[in-house]
Amino acid sequence: MIDPFGRPITYLRVSVTDRCDLRCVYCMAEDMTFLPKRDLLTLEEMERLCTTFIRLGTNKIRITGGEPLVRRDVVHLFQALGGRIGTGPGQGLRELTLTTNGTQLVKHAETLAAAGVRRVNVSLDTLDANRFTQITRWGRIEQTLDGIFAAKAAGLAVKINAVAMKGVNETEFDAMLAWCGEHGFDLCLIETMPMGDIQGDRTDQYLPLSVVRARLRKTWTLAETDYRTGGPARYFDVVETGQRIGFITPMTHNFCESCNRVRLTCTGTLYMCLGQDDAADFRPLLRAGATDADLEDAVREAISRKPKGHDFIIDRRHDKPAVARHMSVTGG
Image 1: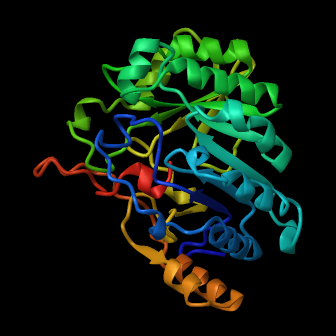
Image 2: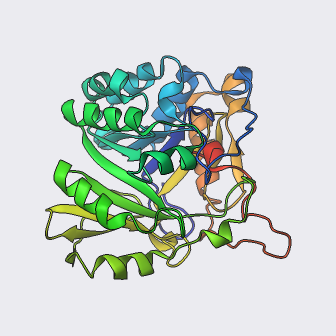
């Protein structure tokens, strides 16, 4: 699949649920209204769509949410997709990965590893227990930390994702980098993005990662590297720890020129760009008895509308986010 700007689309992010057992302040409103079950694709429908993408050249699938591991029986989807690693046209999937808040990893880490998952991204914005509860609104850091170490014990490579927020966690990144180095984890910092009506003015929390990187370089040696995971992060080797740090910068330096991914929501809506509203709805097709050829044609048509880039600009005149839907709807 090649989009209108010559970019191969090889990476599919699949949200299996909009629900989560936390309420992180940058992701959800505290009083979220979640989708009724009937609106969600079944796991079998998700597998069929994913298989269509694999046939068309997708070689990496990341399962996201909400919190994906709160969906009942979701391990069956991991097992089904894991069976397609290295099989089919173009050798099928190369990688099946997961983004999670870690709360359910104690229960699922070994099963995920057995299914073919080799890497997990775990959201952890702070190592301070009180601040963790403030950011997640009601989470307990011990539950996430236990999940992280359960993943490590199961043989999964762990990357820690942290959203950088001015006045919230900006003084913690030296300590987080040291902690990740101690335990063999990579760290990825993410600029906060103007998505969803989550209450409060996020412009005050926006922290350019160029500033963070300059601060970290006062303590750490960050060496250029060509390491890539297929996502938008730019990585550096941390010489003192032997681990890596990545920076995802949708605001200060967008990554659109090399975008290789699209996002499928739990309702079967495909967003060709995280920061645009144009979408394709596959649920009606699936439930009307579409053939494999019908689905392939629909995917190709959607990819033909992929835009050149996002437009993450906060509408300060009307105090509106650039994109109205919550991050948890599109998939983290």
